[in-house]
Amino acid sequence: QVQLVESGGGLAQPGGSLRLSCATSGFTVTFTYYTMKWFRQAPGKERELVATITGIDDNTEYSDPVKGRFTISRDNPKKTVYLEMNSLKPEDTAVYYCYCAGIWGQGTQVTVSS
Image 1 (cartoon, rainbow, N blue to C red):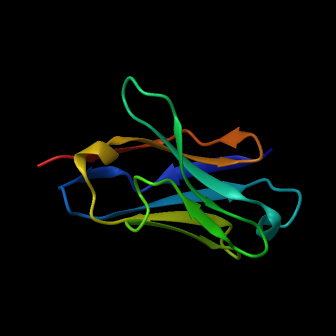
Image 2: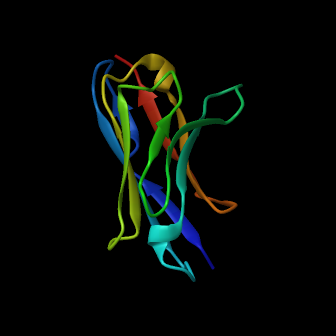
């Protein structure tokens, strides 16, 4: 079955950077065709969509709070999607989840604090 495994979370200072990875496995169709998404959920808040990268043409979209600071990308031979996070703010603190075709990863904690 399809599995999504996030990594790369941790503690960062305000203004710092982190890169999250989402390694995938179990796709029955070429990974290239799948639209991949990153969500996040802060304590006491609903899960929110952060970034999307479409299959085939790799179009990207971002939520307003992260636009210009975060970059989503994919490596199709490695079946992995990334989220590069720059100029981090304390309000970026959340558990970040990878999502594809109804499947969620387990999440990785990102904490931004001095």
